[in-house]
Length: 433
Image (tube, rainbow, N blue to C red; front, side):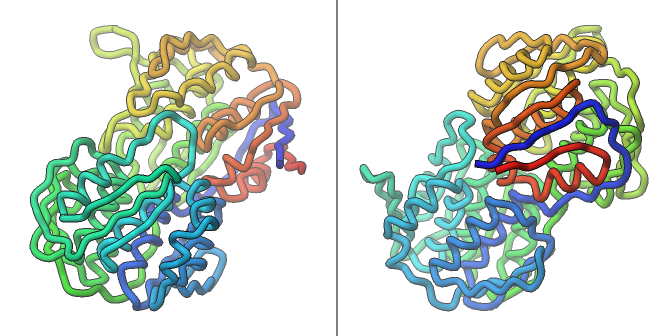
């Protein structure tokens, strides 16, 4: 198992470019299963979760060509359906939550799919009901057996109207991919509408799908007989952009974040500004100057600032870990309200051990009492999930002394070459086996 040795206390400066979007990559790579033609995708991040998904598709029979480190082509001409019920497939799925997004395209194109219960971050319950309720509305039937295998099939999917029980991002993506080849028209209300869902819809339309309402929570999908190939480029990863904003606020001495696709960041810059962080917009770049001090704002009536996650265009739950760490160094207090996942705030115990003043009220809420640049203590820690891991790495960069972080494969799942990229800005992070 790999670990990081982090020497904290250095100021970082320079320019950093965000990688391609992890969540978009998992969606659009799975969408390549919908056609036997070539689908070419660029700006793919070279991260563990994407590598696992690509290996899974290759084992299923997808022809994968790596054109460069960040560009691949996929061709699904003949798939090995026997592999989909093998022990090896089950084990691979158990390590990767993104594997669940194979169900929609397999069901839409072949009328059946067998997928194991997916793995991923341990951040509380992440139910799949929305996916299967949507498939059922399209006419599919499914079973969930004792071996944690989901088996789903349909002789013919038929379009219908459906109101999703929650605006699930992966659920919406899966239902869209099943519906594009269904007979008739599918209308999805309360659909997730974040930029990566919009990107998936645009790629599918480029492949010959007929999707209307892109960018809204009401999608109309007119089924087509077949899809063809397409060329697609991923957006930059908005969560990595937010991670770099938080890092720059904590330990930056002037950092440019280049090519962020500002129009697709939503309220992310505003969330950091509420903590007193200066976020300057320069074209499609962000500049974060050095912050000797910063002060948490309040609401108009003077009440304590609350930062809460919500479906797009609300604040992404993936950024609350970063915002929590940044708030420890502010002047003032803030309530962090993690509504969407019930175990994601438990990592604050590690921040408390480092000297942060945080009250964990319950699994969903924590009050951070900022220390106005009070020094954090270095220590030993372990990365519990992707986002908490990067948040703890930022805290270690700000701490005095040397910290050790174990289980960094969690960070590798979502961040490409993170230690090398931060070291190029002046950080001192060493990877050891």
